[in-house]
Length: 461
Image 1 (cartoon, one colour):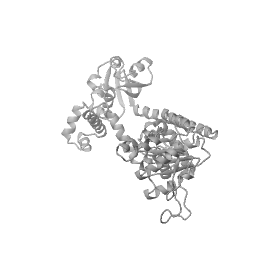
Image 2 (image 1 turned 135 degrees about the vertical axis):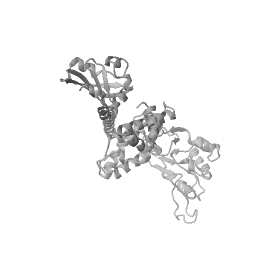
Image 3 (image 1 turned 180 degrees about the vertical axis):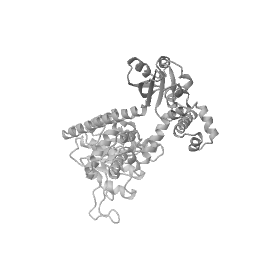
Image 4 (image 1 turned 45 degrees about the vertical axis):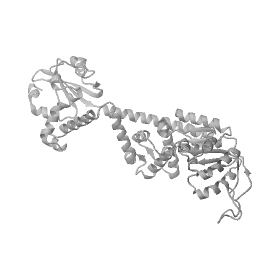
């Protein structure tokens, strides 16, 4: 390697096409030349690198440690991880002897390993989480067998633990309970858990969705009817769900959908545990515990005269707010693996998750909460082409939300023009490396050659 190399533009063009950085110093540690990739890695133009001693470059924070210096000291091949401008590089230094010139040079090949390190860390972290959640699931199974914990309320977040603690405390008393929370958060599961841990556990748990039954039928479904109460009614009459729940628990789901005309009759049931069947004249008494649930703002409905104020306060003796899944993200992985096991058993599959899938699922906002997560896992197990579910199997709404969220996070510390300039710089840089001529590089970006050249100058490439 003679001086002709450092002045030969053909050699420069060849080495400038390499994606690895090439840094060359003389036997005294003075930088002689570096390729374009190396200048980008170091974060300085060639004019600020060539001619300077590696000690000086290291002291100014261009790279740490100086592989050139270590090679000169040890006189052997050296590989080190360097840091520069918040990125990590794998640098390998070689002692090159040119016998005919009686000269020695240090050649350092530098590979950017920032993304590799990040991906490796993510994989390691994901695998660690998988092991942790698998162990937690096994412990949950053992605990369920011992009868010490819920089979369905899964999660170890603080909010979930507080919810379980409250459920266990209110289950032992007979107070009326109002469960609130978004659709899909598991209000019916919580109601079932309260019943299972209550003194009424050996009696009926009767559930009715107030929004799923036509208004004309709802009264007779709830309170029953006497024979001949209306056209088409059974001649023997019929017990309502209220009477079927006698001794146990009546769960009124979607209580906000209860028609105003029926609310006085429900108020009487809540207050006195008494009711009159449709077509009847005699008051009936029942021994029931009432749990109601809604995803609506009942206080707002009271103000709008769509829900009786006295009924609202009668139902709201103990209020339990069930948090949305996005508010307890640490519970998402245990839920995922619970449903993964459930549907693997159901469909006799052996599906597993690729390491990248868990991160997408945990970052997704889950507007449909646990119900949406359950449906998603079932869908993935049924539709995935391979046993290992990969990111390509995820629906567009999850991938798109992750991309948008990532872009917004990246924008947090930059103005929009700064962010767009960062993207433009990266694209110009990639085109310069990929295409040998400025004309082809400009065409690949949809720019004129003069526009492309102006940007090269702007970004000092």
